[in-house]
Image (cartoon, rainbow, N blue to C red; front, top):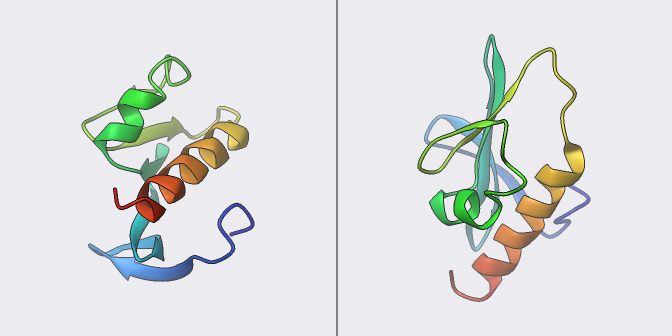
Length: 88
């Protein structure tokens, strides 16, 4: 992934994920949405930008048929990678 080039692709909890020391983000495509799981703290940190998206404790759902905000996803992944790098 160009946002975190040092990360490796793995399967974790039965889902594809990017890992760098530990999992940064899991993701999966479903019938009605693309789900990313960056953890609960990320959902809180990006709450303002996530208005209008369904979220849960540690997941964000991007509905199929609606444009995906790839910049938002990139920002979340960069933030999470930095968090992992700093021991989070």
